[in-house]
Length: 385
Image (cartoon, rainbow, N blue to C red; front, top):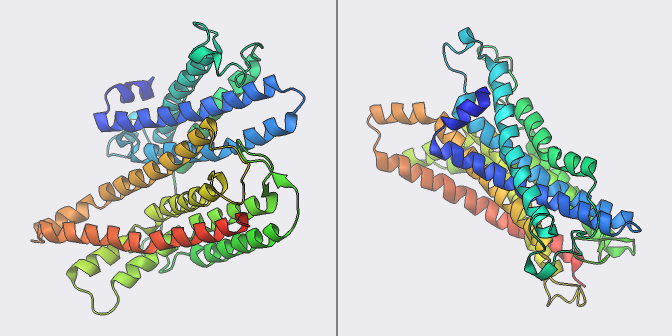
């Protein structure tokens, strides 16, 4: 009830972010229900249905990450003086954030169920001349337990992840500071290199292919495993790369703008580095997938085109990772608001602060854009003849 009251009295931008979480949850719920419809319509082929379900884990993870980012920036989850006296301590605030995430994701799951039932013709008859009847198994009854379990997957996972991310933590002792290079950079680089090596090695063998959504068995399973390792490496190396970018900005006699931009990047590396690395991995994977799904690709001359469900899943992953990065940037801006206000009180021109922000954006783009293109090119090479 408290989460519902906070949702009703929230700022319009906060409500918009929660509605975006609900929309992402609706997309994932619809993909899960479509997978169930395929399994019902093809009872003699359980393996393809299981693989479709496994592919749904990627947009599910992206949606949960976005939901956690929204919960972290929710004003109702910030500790404020006097709240502990009325029973709203850090643990209660984490539970409230989890309840708000559950509410948004449940709304999205209900929308997905209504759209799914409408396309099946269970509500008002078959729309679109019944073109989706075979895909959604409109001629067969739906198992209620399976529908309930799939629709509860996003709310339960999102609530658990939000509660874990906002759990009360023991404050650091005075005088302790964070390490100067985030520890994940060497491990992330090594994991990325291992992933690319696994992709190259697996492409030379004649192993059994793993079906992609809407495609036959054209990609070796080792190639996909290597790409997952590469994506994990980029996500792990993201904070270190952002910290390195801030260090390079301050090199060679920096001025006030470069010094401010570099120090800010180093301070925010842990907050925006991981979402930026995940977005880099997502973009590189989508760029590599264009080689696989392109109708003009010599590697897959007879492969079907990019299907609607595959397009929905790819759009969900890209939208959620991009929205997560923007939400993390908003959280960073809110966290450095006292510092910005102090600089203005000290007489720092507003133009200097805007130039420093633009310098940070350009520096990150100059580092991550070629990195994304390079990883995408190397990942697509095993898929080419």
